[in-house]
Amino acid sequence: MNKIVADAQAAIEGINHGMTLMLGGFGLCGIPENCISALNDKGISDLTCISNNAGVDDFGLGLLLQKKQIKKMISSYVGENDEFERQMLSGELEVDLIPQGSLAERCRAGGAGIPAFFTPAGFGTEVAEGKEVREFNGKPHILESALTADFAIVKAWKGDKFGNLVYKGTARNFNPPMAMAGKITIAEVDELVEPGELDPNFIHTPGIFVQRIFQGKDYEKRIEQLTIRKIEN
Image (cartoon, rainbow, N blue to C red; front, side, top):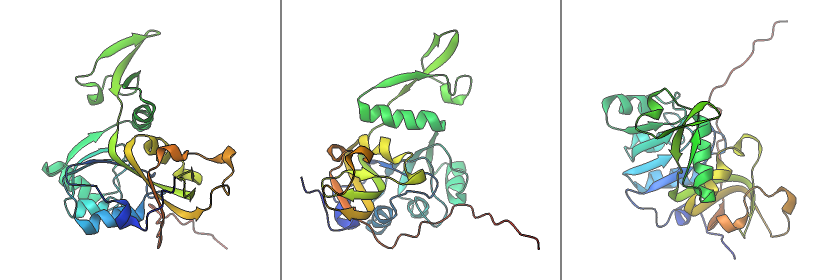
């Protein structure tokens, strides 16, 4: 029942070249910073990464892109990373862009054991190419398959040694569905507490989905786009 590991390096043990990873977060909020740094240091490559976004040039998944560790990105929003754009346009990086709601549901479906579902999102665009189309209530829908991963790596606000997790704010976005969809799920947390300290009514990810947990350190928690309003006297 005790799922605590020492640190990020211990948490990523078993992640090898060519694997598929899910990485939680939204923009730069709620991303598993420590595990991404550990993957970067270890030099694991040929990865397929499923994430809402691809970080920025010098932070988040941008660190792995800089060292050519990612062979394929499955994402929704990638507009803040120049290196991602360069690799995609040059053909160095395979990219599967997915509507944001579809990406979230494909991850949730993977965790729930639902192999596929129909959605209207993307019909009539390149997203629908090669996919089955059916009509529901007079509206065309395309068939989307569920997403799963060898490892899901998430970031939570609080967790206990049994793996129960609570997310905070915007981090409660892609982290919960991805935590369900990995064969092995790693959670790094701001605060590691004893069992019983988390109110069971407010646990977002039950520990049954988590295999490894550790308390992270030195979080930068960067702001993706800092906008400052000038106040006139």
